[in-house]
Amino acid sequence: MGRRRIGIVGYGHLGEYLVKEVLSSGDLDLAFVWNRTASVLDGKVENQYVLHDLDAFAERNADLIVEVAHPDMTKTFGERFLEAADYMIGSPTALADAETELKLRSAATRHGLYIPTGALWGGEDIRKMAEKGSLQALKITMMKPPESFKLMEPLKRKLLEANGGACVLYDGPVRELCPLAPNNVNTMAAAAVAAHNLGFDKTMGSIVADPSLTNWHIVQVDVWGPGDIAAGTAFHCQTVRRNPAIIGQVTGSATYASFMCSVNAAFGKGPGVHLC
Image 1 (cartoon, one colour):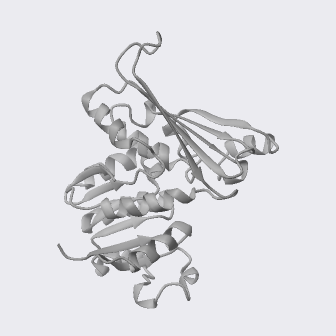
Image 2 (image 1 turned 135 degrees about the vertical axis):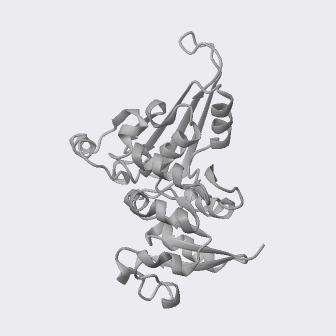
């Protein structure tokens, strides 16, 4: 197998991390880097790698294109990316839009559509339960300091009204939450993809602003399987991940390494939708 060529769409903190990792890798080559504000790349990325016009992405012959910019990139370019290469969605909240999800699943006939697990613990186990039909319910609870949330209305206003205090900002279906907190709940979107028998409508999510979390983001995953949930006799697995994070960071530090592992795993699975 030859060296794989990676195209990176977006150059925020995660994009910058990925560029450095790809350039220092022994079996990956950097096909291109694109950023909405091109001047951000000046002095940081060699000109030979900079792609100024994203419409020309196919000319760089990437084997895998990785989006780490914004969910709108998937809505605009996702189908086209999949015509030319495997595509890894760093902002899977884009798939909460039912039309976008359907289009991308339909487009993944020649290349693979990869969903990174990010901070999701036990994603493969959830997927296996969904395939067996034994997954009854799934809920992901994310707790972060108030400064680490980037929210749309009405959640933005609700956070302001909490005035720095602890507050449950949302509790309900992941599909409704994703467009309200697109930068914060990619883990939940990945869980909804893994739990394909439940999907975005029946996978539940809760986000909690907690000012006492000065060093951590907490992700709690509750899975219910065979048995009677109401009677308390159903299979239940709960995992709690404490992800080190500086106040104000949207993404915990451990997620960066996890994401790079997903890049390395995003190949060889063929067409279709795959967790990685």
